[in-house]
Image 1: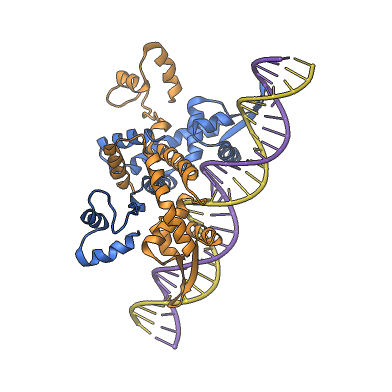
Image 2: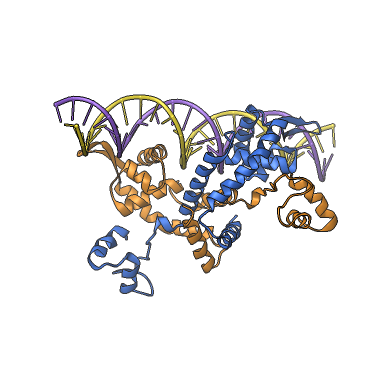
Length: 173
Length: 173
DNA sequence: TACATATCATTTGCATGCTAATGATACCGA
DNA sequence: TCGGTATCATTAGCATGCAAATGATATGTA
């Protein structure tokens, strides 16, 4: 049961799929047989919308942030600024990146001399990651831009709506 | 000006960074000098939260969907089911994927024989993409699973909260 | 001490997602 | 018809993001 079938009817009687379903069977939402209503509007699915919103956000981020800072690079540097030296795994946990992803991010930050790493002398498994002085300066200077990115991302929302959104999203992770 | 400095104070007097800033200067939010307040909590930034929520969602998606369907593959197939044959570019626009991304998705769907493509005889530039009969069957069978993915993603929210969230997110893309 | 288990890190492979460069085809106005 | 412009598609390069396999190091216990 696919939307296009309804769209044709829609041309004739000026009703959308949902309304037509209501007319045919307001309780169970089926037509002509017992097939369950599988009407599925991609554009209303939270996952699809989340992808699109995050896409727009990363576009804003790329446009406004200095120093080629990406969301993940910046996140790692902010956490290092806040928490100091961290093992690579711990840095990944703090920034919601798995070990493969955080390794790539750290490698690229090292290539730019924004972070440095050294083995933990007390635990030979650990790579301890910390900001270089250049990295500290870069991330401190980037903070106001990052605030601006957040502002631009939610510019269409009122202050109450902004709080609502963040509270709702926090319940989903 | 980094949070850890406040955290130490916090131990002693039981106040968070925001409250301490209020005490020192409720108007301009600075302490001891004219440096603007750059307090920046990564975990409260909407972009960072969006990434984490979408991450969790894709995890649910991967766990529940059949046929190795990913969010983008499924999105493309749903749009083809709904709208019929589309040019590759148009399919990308309908699913919020740029031309490079949609090409990869289409290539992988073709490799699985879920979609087929042929040049538009009326416009030699266009690759017209459509579902194969196998692809149609796969996506129709996948729809209830996709509904379940959405349900699991927002399981922590009440019905009103779900509507709120979707409405707020739609304002951001 | 020796072994099992856990943790940390690396690597490979696959899948998005973007930009930029390139080439082919349509279309439109002079 | 010609030439400029627009659209469609391909390709290359870089950056996430995940799963799985591998290896090195710690740790706890028999």
